[in-house]
Amino acid sequence: MQAAVLMVLLLSVLFPPRADAHAVLVNSSPANNQVVDQAPAEILLHFNEPVKIVRASARLANEKSVELESSGGGADISLRLPSINRGTVIASYRVVSEDGHPVGGTVVFHVGAASAALAGPSEAPSFGLDTVIWFVHVASILLMAHVVGGRLFSALFNPSDPAVRRPMTMVSVGFVLLASSLYLQGLDEIGAGFTFAGATTLSTAIGSNVAVASGLFSLALLLAILPPFRTRSLTVSTAVIAMMVASAAFTFTGHSALATPPWLAKTCIFFHGGILLFWIGSLPPLWRLSRHPARQMSLKAFSAAIPAPFVAMLIAGLTLAALELPGLGSILDSMYGRVLVVKIGLVALLCVLAAYNRFWLTGPAIQGDVTACGRLRASISAEIVVAVAIVGAASLWRFAGPDQFQYAPLHPVSIHIHTDKAMAQFELKPKSQDAASVHVTILASDFAPMRPRAVTLRLWNPAAGVEAIKYELAKAENGGWEAEDVPFRSPNGWKVDVQVLIDDFTTAHLEANLDESVDSNGVAAETTLSDDAESPSSRNAR
Image (cartoon, rainbow, N blue to C red; front, side):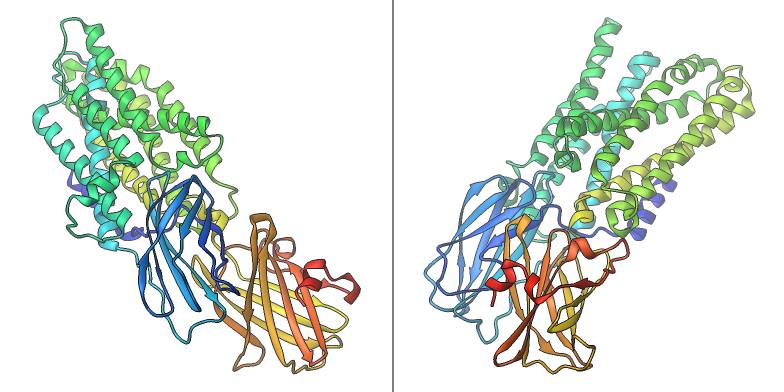
């Protein structure tokens, strides 16, 4: 058991929990960094999935902070604004997605003009809270496997075994873990960090899917500790119902809430989670049985029955991964993909150990071979360590979802845009999950140096409904024009327009589609436009 704990701690060091957002703000109105002539009555937020608003506030140009009322539902949220005269408005929000992960964000816009200096709030991740959430989640799953999975194993293959030893202690520990999980969820939703925040955290988390999952897990624990009934069929039925309730709890949290089609994703997580609980819960009683050669018939029955559900667990897991991943090319570019690779490796190791037990050790152990029994115990102990590591790795998905593949800028973008009046080398480099830096080099159409009066950058995404975000580029020290901290996630669907003020009477528009120009390495082919071929959006922007 010490080795299992060591494996979990090692995983936490290799893959420290990081709060990467699952719900992503696709667009807002006003758009981020937009300058509007008149103050809007509300801010419209559109996310990539349904969310629940936890809180929202705005900091005005006079440095006054006000709480904002929210309305709407699903993926669209409205925040009502107070009366605003002029200056920069920093609106911050915190929402919870369907997979139970809270995330905060900020929309900055300017009424009339930007304020002289106004710093916005930051959503710094709480590593202490993330670590505790991860540890409690791992402990809860392992306890559920030990109690519920162990009860089902005993009911099916070893009726004389009491299955759950010290049942009241197990249930008490389970309730403490589940209550702690609910409280930690509330802390995460309100963004309080790892601290004591009173009963408000519980009331915040009660309406979440995590509360539903905790309730189902609690019911499964209670069913699993019931004493054996007089008839074996009733005992088996109760154990099966407990396992089904525990399996159903998995469908209310995690990424199955986001994958499509949802019915297939939830079916996969139901079978994958339930069979994994049964498998892990079977290992301790199997280890105990391997110590007594005279009681190996239970081991023989388990060995004969387990291949079909084990294969079903693998198929369900692979199907779920296929639903959530857009492709294998970028699997190592996010924490979600790296954790998936680690989990697949651990599952492969578990398969090797299981095959070794079944085909090389089970037969001799049933015949009473003492050496085989000793090796079987050692192999089962290794399986327990690997199973704990699998749960520890999979629990890291609480902090990183498959949506990272869609919204994270994985590669720099470099585009050469050439028109009859001027040409530009446009470079965008990701700095974080939500921001990038932009550098533009301007030359004449014959590659001669050019000294434009001003350079303006416009970015917009018509497919996502994002209106043009305008940036006045500043002269870079090493030449060219640049802007920092541009709120930008992915080239998918985005268009760029570099507006070059050549002189007081001449402006050149250099426009390109980022997603159509970028190859697998993030580098684009040359885009050539004639002055007559400029798009209507460019002409309207003049």
